[in-house]
Length: 420
Image (cartoon, rainbow, N blue to C red; front, side, top):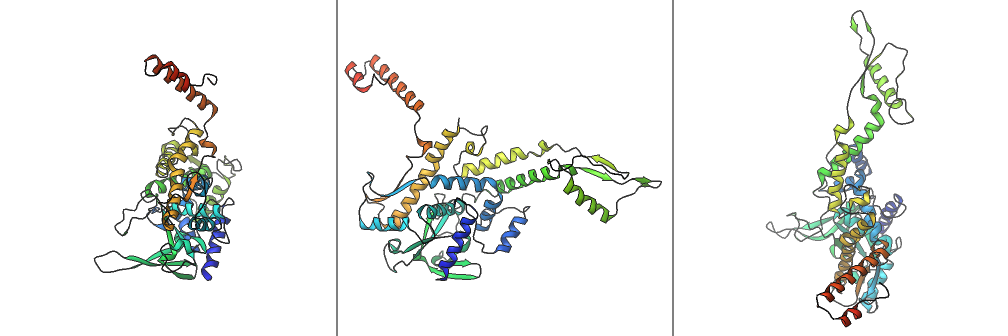
């Protein structure tokens, strides 16, 4: 099938731009348009649209960094099928577990799930195409032969309106890859929604909404601040007025072609980088008037920090992990890392499990797709913490014994004297 070939190209395109397979780079639906987005850096980035969300990922460093790092953290989870005790049985669960472990011929489970998570985080929802599902099945996901993540810029729902006074119901999806287009029935597309629910009146059902949706101004300002930093670093040496010599009639301006020639050469040769000149030397009778322009007055550092905070909070990502130690509420990186897993990664991974279990009709059964992050270093209790906990417990028991709440025998039974 042609769509499988295009999906393979999209997956390879996704991998090519990041050797770890964690970051998302969109399959080029329209390469010329994508290039124009990146060139047109002065326009507002509309993060309410899929196109704007892609541009935010490509031009706003905190967005791509946070999603990439969260994807790496998500992929460290230990997923399994079974009950809470780790026992594994039932044919239905084994079928979906086998499918997740070998989703398609191009990806293993970790690569597939990481790509799905990245789409979910960036766009608020992830579209998964189930190849070979049985029509009319109560749980079509269980009948799929292969699973493929379709990049959000390449897919859009087609609404079939029932009447003028009702919202449309999706009957099929249109998938585009460059010049190829496909129509896929809605029962072959499975949608993993983010926990951020769309409040758009255009959505008939509660669907996931990109966390970037309300962040158009912070994302645009952050990208602009980084661009301004780069421009100042590169062109700082040009902050002045270069004037020609004078004759009896007064100042003699440069001709237009001379102005452009000097400007081009000056920008290339002078600046504050170590490979550029900082002092202008000329045989001509020139005057240079320096223009005072304190960089601190631009507030670029504050702008970057404030906008990064807004983006970080939307993704439950501690700023301490981005290097903003003074802007963080956590005392150290270990504490921030633990908060990332407890507040974001674990609930989101459990959300993925709930999505798969629901699509398979096993969400209320003892045997399910489950996940654990107990082996992650950031969640391990340190020896110092263990010692502090023991001391605190001993002090509590001593107070209870002194107040007569517990007896001496109960005290001895609860505390391990040798360890303390």
